[in-house]
Image 1: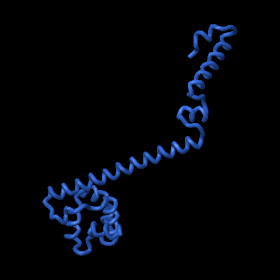
Image 2 (image 1 turned 60 degrees about the vertical axis):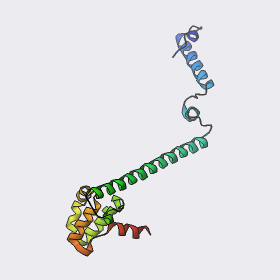
Image 3 (image 1 turned 60 degrees about the horizontal axis):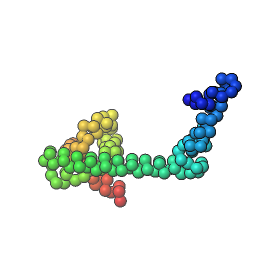
Image 4 (image 1 turned 180 degrees about the horizontal axis):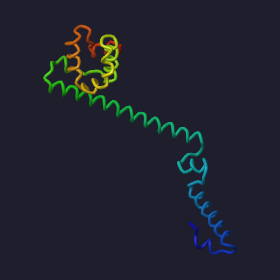
Length: 163
């Protein structure tokens, strides 16, 4: 705003306002807040030059990516824990209590399996994934019952692809 002491000087109102604005800009600059434009923006962010601002932005992005990766790892660990709890609740054998691969891998295996053995079921792939989410042992048991030896073993496939 306009400083009342500055506005009381000589001249027209327009010149008083202009002087008040100039003084306010000088105060901002002396306080280290910077003016407008890139230089002012960098000064407000604490950057001395453009390369420093770029490095600061890169560091912030790296921190965000690291946090995202940590959240994803935590989510996968929680999902594995839930799978084990579900298997225990369903009274499945120790072999069925093993940790299963990520859902995306299982979906890819099912897509390949249905493409080769039951193409008509590809349309329902998302519904099947939703229905059996976290209940992979039950899905495998159903596939083995319906397709016998052709049915995929998700854990074995996952282990072979990891190697």
